[in-house]
Each structure stands twice: as structure tokens, then as C-alpha cells.
Image (cartoon, rainbow, N blue to C red; front, side, top):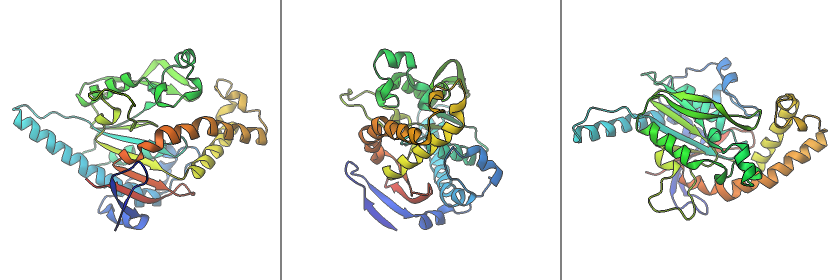
Length: 317
């Protein structure tokens, strides 16, 4: 196994695994998913196969199960020290990375696999999209073109939610978001009732805030294990353009869609539009805000041009 230092802005050292080395760490973790299960997990434009699950996500599931067991032991020790009954605190996993890199698919795969652990834990999945400010607020603040940037999120609400999760509060409500209307849904929420495991997926969950006070909380303070989904930007851009073209033929045709105006574009016009959106928004957010947080992740999944994970980096403890 080779160990290498990460790139600029990432001073930590990582164990560096090839795909074959990582797959060998699966151990006896059983495969519970079937081919037809993958259709409900795979995002538009993503590539998911049973082989990918077996070689990449089952070893990761094994690693996470070991971390979860260790966290339970720490909680028990703390309870004994404080002479308190053992408290069941959710184990929180964060999944970060660029738009179009496949975060949502990976989060759903992990949810499905972790729910099959021997004790059959309740595993919930929340995306940070619901914590975006409503479009009306973004327009008022001149941030509509910076949607997805750190300042477009209600960070205080997100941190408050995660703090409540970690305190074990029951019946928590997470705000929801519609990609059809491209806005939060004020009269609809996701209800969580003390899950054993919570997966939080979002662009900027590893973000630090410039000029923040030393005692100010970060979203990452409430995450037990963090994953960054990585790929060359040229590949992510191609995946984004491909997905845009697929949506143009499907979801964009819905009259209720915020992007319905793109459904009638010619192929050349749609390609140019998607390229412009990538260059003006997603590229800037990736370079300025998302990519610099990569070195804060516990584990990095590096994808190749075929959307398959080719290397895995695990931060040394």
C-alpha cells in the first residue's frame, strides 16, 4: 500500500488504495443488494453496477460499521463516567463533492447497505438542498446566480438541525427541496425519529467560514465520518452536460419545471447553455468553495472518466 501526501491546501496524509487493494478489504461483508435494487439508487447519468457496489461500497460499509461500533463504545464509556444511562446518539455521515459528481447516488447506496447491517439500524438520508434560502430570499439578496454557494444556505438552521440530531431529539423535521420548481417547499418536511445512522449529503458540508469566531460551530463539527467524492473537473463537466441534455428530454418538459424554458432548445443551444451555467456557476463554486475542502474529508473516493471509482484515499488517524 502506498501512502502519499495530498495536493496543495491538503496538509494531511492519506493511505492511497488502488481499486483492487480497496476491494480486498471487503472482508466477509455480505452483498444484500440485487440488480433491480440499483435502478432505485442510480442517479440520472450515473453508472452503478453490482461489481461497483461489491468492490467499492461494501468495503466502505465495513469501515463505517467499525466506526459506528467504536462510537457506541465511546458513548457507553462516557455514560459510565457520568453515571448516566447509555444514550443512543445517531452516527452522522457526511457526503460532499461537486455538482454532477454522483454524491446523491453514493449516499443512497450507503443508506441501503447500512440498513442491512446485522442489527438492522434505521438509516435516514437528508440533503442540504432543503436548507437553501428560498428563491425569494436569494433574489432579494442578489444571490440567485450563486445558488449552491456557501452564502446561499441557511447555515444557522442547518447547524441547529444537526445539533438537535446529535442530542437525540425525536421527531425532527428537515426542510425539503424540489428540483422541479427549483425551490424549497415550505409546507412539506422530512420527519426523522431518532435514526441510528444519518447520512447528510451536500456541496459545502466540509466548508469553513472566513472570519468566523473561534468558538463558532461548523457543519463538519457534527459529522462523525466524512466522504468527499472527487474527479477531474473536465470529467465532472462532461457528466454535468450529459445530465443536462437528458433532463432537457425528460424533466424539463414538465410545464411546472423551473427549467421548462430549456426544453425547446436545439441541441447546440442546450449544449451552449449548459456549458455557460457550468462555467459561470458550478466551476466557480467548485474551485473557490468545494474543492478546497477535500483535504478535510476522512475518505476520498476518486472517480475516473467512466464514473467508476478508481482510487480510494483514507486519511490517517
